[in-house]
Amino acid sequence: MAPTKVLAGARVVLPAGTVDDGRVIVEGTRIAGGGPPGPGTAGGPAEAPADAESVDLSGHWLVPGFVDIHNHGGGGASFAGGTAEDVLKGVHTHRAHGTTTVVASAVTGELDFLARHAGMLAELAQQGDIAGIHFEGPFISPCRKGAHNERLLRDPDPAEVRKLVDAAHGQARMMTLATELPGGLDSVRLLAEHGVIAAVGHTDATYEQTLRAIDAGATVATHLFNAMPPLGHRAPGPVTALLEDERVTVELINDGTHLHPAALRLAFHHAGRDRVAFITDAMDAAGFGDGRYMLGPMEVEVADGVARLVEGGSIAGSTLTLDRAFKRAVTVDGLPVGDVVAALSANPARLLGLDDRIGSLEPGKDADLVVLDSGFDLVGVMRRGEWVVDPRLA
Image (cartoon, rainbow, N blue to C red; front, side, top):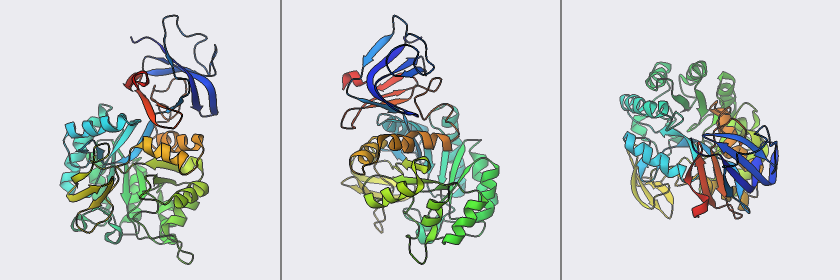
């Protein structure tokens, strides 16, 4: 068994607040204690063992590992259409940027292909490499299709929705729907009955239609503001309905391209810290570089870090990693560190039903954590007690 690790001297962000000159004690794959220096820390052992390995993190931040519920790939590899090896490559790319838990997102495709691909992703989820599957499409609006192939879009028939859920062998975590389409509300109810998050997105719904979807069981807004009608003073649309209902968690892509900082702050202020989940919506180029890529069946050109469809020019996901989203949220958007940690870790962990294991630095939870320097640049990542990025080598 690996020796106990004592991570000491950092500003540790805990659910109750930030502890200066704090410590986290890691035993094996789990957190054994944490809080102020000295014995009796937050439910941990009175003293770390004499042979414990001490890591000095003075001048750094120590925060929970990030949880990404909407991610299509990275490192030059695709979650949406790649092999198992491709998926693992993308997972490891994002892990090196602090995302210790990731849900693999599919994009619109032929129904039979999506079902087969879900089977492969389900095996990776059962092995613990990913935290499940998110189906984004094909049950979305052609009016708000974004980077999805319009030829392959279809109304959300509950029988077809059930086919994809069944193909995921219990690993379906979320499905994005245009709930105003025929079959939309019945599909939301079916997903809720099977414990799958119904997310409103790529939608042309009105305010009233969105309220009906929430009442039917929808609990997430897929990349709020993007691929939906804008907020209007006479036609408030889905944005208003999703922001004002306390049952809904809103996804935000904080890359400086998808959202103006003022729009992000408005959403954060109105939804509050407990109802925001920062996501990447990343595609293959995340952590890799500019060039030509495929997003499902669609060709994408990435230039200066911005991904757009070759045909039509629509934004096609992002090249974001969550460490960059963290830094931007604090240094550009001016959000409190504790609120950003909630949006990157605690809230998405709770949505996935995994908050008993991940999402905060508490005794008994997985030792998933991120070390940031004083300027909020990533210098260390630990997943289940093992360094992915060792801060001592930074």
